[in-house]
Length: 532
Image (cartoon, rainbow, N blue to C red; front, side, top):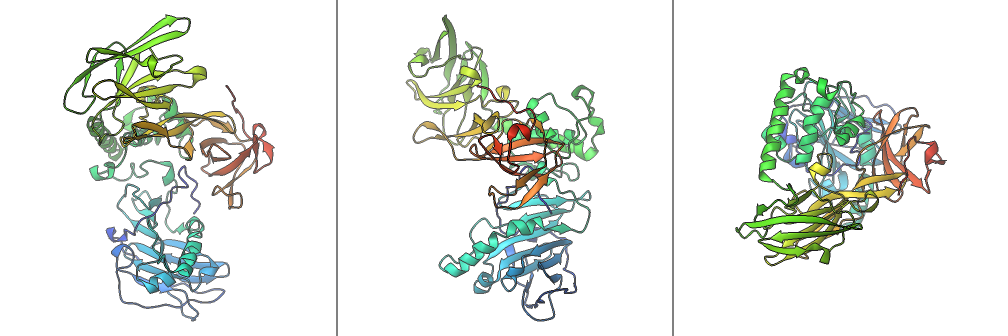
């Protein structure tokens, strides 16, 4: 099964949770075809992966094979719970499979036999309970009837680190897991586009409060609107429209003013209400950032000592492209121009923020349009005597200035706006982090950056894209003649690109040449834009 959604690289890890499922299943007898046959190792029921009782199978040399396992000329096929995987031929004698009520887990045999439960490589589970994408769980597919298929992977390194040969083999086998997952086939008709949704099942399953607890405000905002998007609603919000346009399942047919919620099912209407209710609670629990008018006197506990401070911000145009900007806190005025230089300060609003919700105190944020459309936000903390400068973030990370998105995660992280000139001049979501002990906001570089919004480009030629950021990795083909979207980049050479048909992968761009087709980028994509 090819996993070509927006989050194709999002495979983490988790101890197997199949004990949560009550759906029982068993593997089927299959006839061996070519190559060596396999041997069944019968064991008493054991804890298996994640504590679920299971039955073990492993590859061997006898003629009689385990249920569901089939040796093939180019590998080994195993079927259980309506799911079939293909294992590499060189895994023979090196793996072990533990089945349970809801699926099966695959282990490195040598580690498992040394210490039961060790050597866990991955698991596949089938059930009816929706998990909120915790660490290590990936929803691979889902059906109209509410059956869900999950990939599960370890979050730790389940191997004896003192046994080098064992760990080397485990790491070698781990490299094959992605290809094995791509081989997964599911017997019943299922949707394979889960990676293109925040909540893939919001049209088929009721969403509980527990399910919604771990979603951020931004995720809830998209999740609510993707219910409408399933029914063809268009959006005035530029980010939302571009986001949904990039989804293979989306067809925008209804103008916002013409769209009626009556087209939603009762389940969808109820889920919209539940998502909205959760978003409201989250907003009450985390009320910042808050926007205020310049010149307005605001009351806020800036130091977290329980005493309310009064704050106002004033900006004055002094003429000749010069400005003065000052904060007044508890009646004392501070000239910010002694600390920062702003090219074109925003004159109508400022913000109170709470960058780290678990630490006492709030921040004051003032905005600068900057030169050439490169805005900055400057942050100050009040220490009881004067505002202390924390640093600046590129862009305006506030919902009112950011297409509805909140750039603060509440734990010190801030998503601002950067610029990249790799294939065209484009804006990206750049990251900063507040170091509370140092009292500084610093750029968190070395990441893979999402593009700020998704702009369609016509694809002129067939484009091979890599499954990993590795020029030697396997490729998939995005056919010419469709719209494609640049979703993310390392800012140096690689771009994650996605076609409207859902096919996605990595391409290399060097000196404005697309390496995979050896052509200038302008001969591969339409509408590339460059600006200062």
